[in-house]
Amino acid sequence: MTNIINNIKTPTQFVAEVEKIVKEKSMNYLDACLDYARTANVEIETVASLIKGSQVLKAKIQADAEDNRLLKRSSAKLPI
Image (cartoon, rainbow, N blue to C red):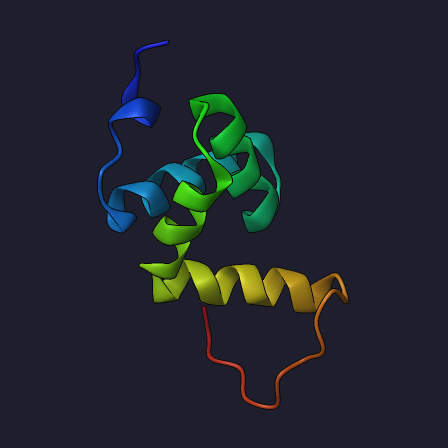
């Protein structure tokens, strides 16, 4: 399996790929990250480090988790 998903080296490239998965497969950000890990056959720890490198992606995952009542809503919410 040789495609762009295997060539991601930076958090910015990872975020772009996750955004693409979210749009194409109509899934939330956390599920898209997990789908990326499964499809690219990478360790979840690698995906976690890429997520940690992106404040934007962390905020989007948090917003999804709050919307799905997996986390308590934070008092301050930035526009995404």
